[in-house]
Length: 221
Image (tube, rainbow, N blue to C red; front, side):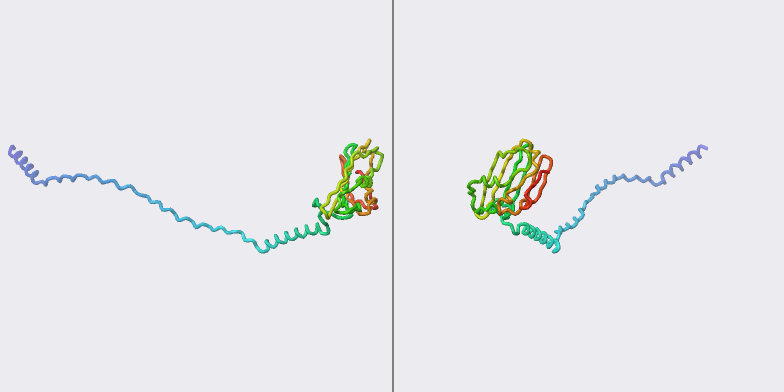
């Protein structure tokens, strides 16, 4: 029995000796980290610049502008055709005159302007001599307003070829509301007059008319 144990032990030793030596594990080599990924940004090619195109003026549009300008020139020419310009730059028409009448309370003012030729005077002459004759024969007031002429101004101007006379009169009345109108006696007193454009104004109304040798009165509205 003892021998058997000895034999088993010897067999075990022999068997162990016959086994191949265990392989020594190779050391683990750490894997180096991967290099960081590089992202390359590539700029997209710029879009081609859109050329600026200027609007083309068509011949029709150009002709329209020319026509408009020509019409305007023709219109202006027609407006002044047959009229001369005097020193003040206004239309100068022999035989024609302009009258303005106003009533403010008990005061009535009258202003008459016309070429010197209307009064039988030279267009180049501004020395009126006794100017009261022109003021006295220019207008009279119609009605019972108990009015008195309190101011008078008569003057003339000329550029050597064309001259005009201006007559300004002021009347102060006891009751101007009773004055019904103004009789422009200059139309019959001076042969050079043919017509007068007249306007008349009050505090509340106005009227306008063209006076002639057969229609010399403008009435208050």
